[in-house]
Length: 68
Image 1: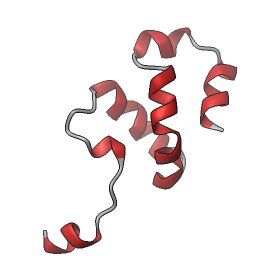
Image 2 (image 1 turned 180 degrees about the vertical axis):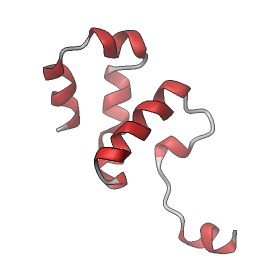
Image 3 (image 1 turned 135 degrees about the vertical axis):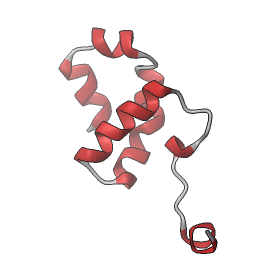
């Protein structure tokens, strides 16, 4: 625990108030790229797609525009 306290990185998805939607999508993104990259797009992604319905209604181009 001491090591984690001194060396851990702070990422937005570690916030205890993040939603299940945010956690699941972040987990998928983390499987595809580095944590620093996901962190850089985290707020813009979840501002544009705040729930499953918005993400489902988005086009591939809409999603790619946010994650590139």
